[in-house]
Amino acid sequence: MDLKRAKHYRWVYQSEGRSIDSPTKPKSSSSSGTAARDAAKDAVDSVFKTQNRSKSSSEPSKQPQSSPPPKKPTSEKSPSTSKSPTPTPRTVYPQPELHQAFLGHVDTISQILFVNRSLISASHDGTVRIWCAETGIQQGYLAVGAAVTAIATSPNSNLFITGDRSGKVKMWNLVDYKLVRSLPLHTGKVTGIHFTLNGKGFVTTGEDGILKIFQLNPVSLRHTLQISKVPIFCSALMGDRIFTASADSQLRMIVQGNITHTEPLSSPLSKTMAVNTDRKWISIGDDRGSVHCFDAQGNLHKSFVGCPGRIQSVNFLSSGQKLLIVGETPLIKIWDTTTWNLCTEWKAVGTGQLTTAKVHGNQIAIAQGNSLQLWQLP
Image (cartoon, rainbow, N blue to C red):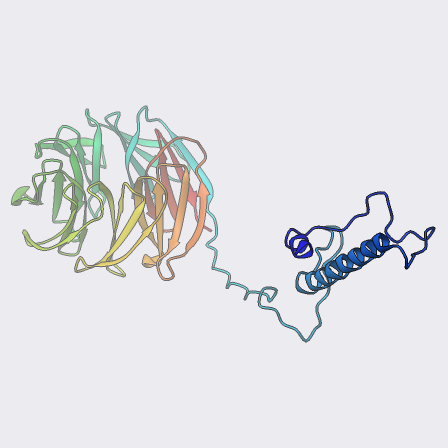
């Protein structure tokens, strides 16, 4: 019973100063005490020798850290040591290079447009500035008077329209930079202005939830549509279709002054929208860093996380095969819309918050606070 208990508690036999089988004291067959001690020692040794042999066979001894692990036979193939397949490398889009920087605004830049070889920036300082994209020299200046929140230019690049925080829409001549007409169209901020493809009309949206459709020559109002009782944050045109995203988390498609389709959005704060006419896609970015792509009928095609934080701007590149995403941080990302993999990313020059972006061919304009950066794609 004592030996069983000793084995249970992994007791190891040790002598206590007196050797049971000391060589200087030979065993005496007449000594019963010595024989009992010898028998006990032999029994304990036999038990723990058996235990140590079974332990060494079932639990291999640990190798020191400095010594290499034992080699396995070449015929054995262990799943734990087998090499995982090498992942297929993704196609990396070339990173752009900083081409030009523009300084002149004293407040945040809200909107950017490319017009021929010029770059137009609108700001909350109440001005619009026209820059030479190659030299960075300011070519023109428009004193709007209120924080500019929306801009658009006609297809012939002569008529320029601004919308401001007070709800006014102003028409300008880009040849001499003079004001042509001022129209109080919305109650609250103007959130979108878009020319029709033929240039014979334009569309405006506002925080009052109203969409208005105008025709030119002469300027006349064709449709006034109350989209919602909450603000319309962004809008875009695709042919004869108008798309709006409002604070009630709804994407709406309007054709000939009628709402023909409504699709729910994941966030009420979806404030940027881009349209690609080649692939007929609409891309929307929200305040949760998510990007949602819809088809021409307004049906959801793909959703993914583009960047952390609020999406400030989305733009299509390369016939819709690439999507530029700008968030609040200086990090700019380009996604592949065929594989939905991240192609490349880079940081703007400064550390301020990015506000908007625009793409024209192989040029990317990024607004960072009151400064403007022009990047060139290889």
